[in-house]
Length: 239
Image (cartoon, rainbow, N blue to C red; front, side):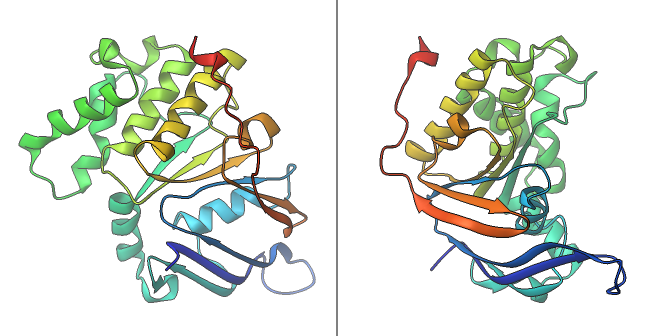
């Protein structure tokens, strides 16, 4: 069974009249547990709109979307928020960290809405921070971190609930090439070593090549959906 199953998905903005904009047009795709999928496309192709729907941040207009075997139409907004917190992790281009709060406190944020006993929070957050190689910055404010360190902290925050899937939206977009390569190695290792399902949004070919499947969008439609035969294996960024 696919973790994510999308059929004939459409998303329109507006009142349904002549001024409405159709952002997604009949999208169908599957993401299995443990898969690493990159969704590519130019600006305006619909990739962010698709990510928002897959990540329960928005609802589609037509078609169907099943997450872990259950259609999104069966979820109330409250249930969507609960699934989003417990089963989905998010990494954004802008990091979305609280600048005047420590790395530890930033990573603990999802735990505050989880129902997990507070006495476990520090250990869970510390373990997530260690997994991205940022333990030496544990008590630093987010504003004191470099761009690459901020994104690693954001990845730790996405990991802290041990989600079924991690959505990464242009995770290297605000980074220099070296920091971007380090971040992509971490994301790739989350998939290959720790078996996390990854859905990556990017417009960069070298970033997408870390994935096992590359889906290309154009004008709200899937232009191609291909498995990567020669997956990028260069580890020069880890030197």
